[in-house]
Length: 433
Image 1 (tube, rainbow, N blue to C red):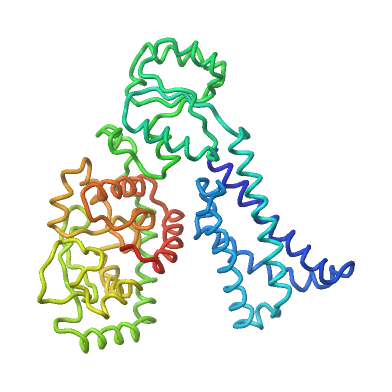
Image 2: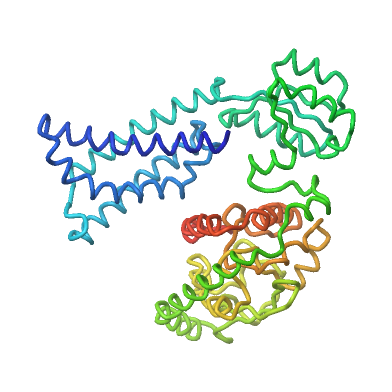
């Protein structure tokens, strides 16, 4: 359901992009718009790819942002502005490629597209909230996770699910399903082991009612996994410690890319080193032992961003006085992490994976259930948890990030890695402290 809705939004955006271009040219040239359309079509098609990417980066393809509120409007306006700015830059920097330098047409296009696309999303929001493509859920179980799901669905009706009831036992399920028009049942895994419940579900097969495991449903709507509902059996069934072809291809790509970046960014790294040396005492490179794949320790390299004569907590705090003036700039731009390209070349870490933590923090976080599962793959420079949640400064925040890490380990692929890299572009320009 979620993928169908996302596809509908995306395809609608594509249609509206081209429709807005046609309307723009028609408003400027009238009946003679076909000739300028041919001239604009190729160039604007390239620009449209950028606009769609910007929409993805600003979360406009997340179903929760389909509901029209202040946050959605802000994201939408920001996406339009960024799209226009990037378009202007591309048109004027690469005239031989685009063969156009539109001013009035681009401004008019942005206005028409903005109005049409916002109207499109408003209509979809009303359809999804009012009942179109909506499924009635019966949730069976007594887990605290259920309350989290129910509250989320209540506050995000555009997702397309309506909770018609929560039952803690299987008594009278058949009657409840008939009375409330249930078409989807979400159950805790323990109920699937109950022979009586299995018999009831078997009798419901002719009604074509969907049956979804609570863990799977949670994963679908939140894109993370509920620690409270997992057990060792789940990990044995769902987690693959090694994916040979994926691991080989990923390593080849990462080695090549990190080598190219190391060469291209070497002048910038030299400049960083000079600034660090001139503005504060201490070494240029900060070396720290981190825990990697299979719990093996390794030395992580970063540009030093903190003073060497002040002690403090393990995790960096907001407005931390230990951070130098240059260090603040390096941290905000994430340029302090450039030396980690050497770690990637060595094979200590990957571009994508769970964050590599200090040994002291790892020992502290081991009280979290299944924390050790993070170490069955290489840690990463960036990852699914990093682009979806702020840096952890407490045990509870580390618990939340672990949910995202387990999701990544279960679903890791080159496609997901690419999406994380794209998301990281926004992360690089966002302060997380």
